[in-house]
Amino acid sequence: MKWFNAEKGFGFIAVDGGQDVFVHYSAIQMDGYKSLDEGQRVSFEVVQGEKGPQADAVRSA
Image (cartoon, rainbow, N blue to C red; front, top):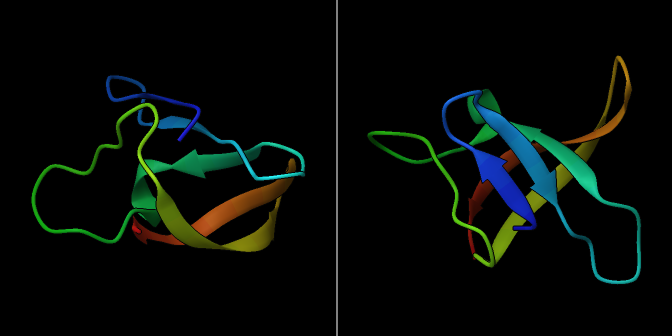
């Protein structure tokens, strides 16, 4: 996880050897409060969003 703003509900995932990917809280698959921590390792799928690639089915790795 590169960074995530819990108040705004979005952030960016740093992809090894690639372009950062946008992530919205609605794509996080976990119970309770959906938030991610800087430096946290996650697994996800990349889908095409309105403004480019974004993460979907995000879960802790």
